[in-house]
Image (cartoon, helix red, strand yellow):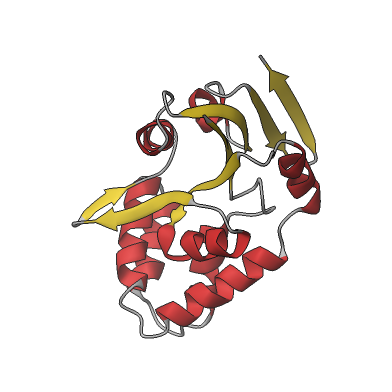
Length: 188
């Protein structure tokens, strides 16, 4: 049985929310009201939920003719800003038979490229057949279980910044919750 480690992307492997960076960098280049700006306003006012916001923004951004360039630029930025102290922790928990899996609520459009750069598989939010799959909280846990069943894999180590991932983290032999510069390691 192979070990798996699950590594959260935003505010864990990198020190910021990559989807926020994507939205802000897109808006910075616009001189007029765009659907993305409108959805951002609705989210700020808490008129729409986070998953609706991500879905609407993702659909709107995918229609932009520079979308692939945006994804490439964001991937390069993320790979250059990976936190070395988090990579050290991951390397300590990674053996020769371990699969490190990048898991994120951010869109698969760039998470897949980041994962390729790391040589890891990934699970991320996506629009599939018009339905938004939000890789967040309980859904993140269910995606890991469906893609990496417990009867086939040993759940070795997980790391995240979010308490919303606690049900996922608790499935692992060891897990770490990272908050800013402080962290808590739990080992069963």
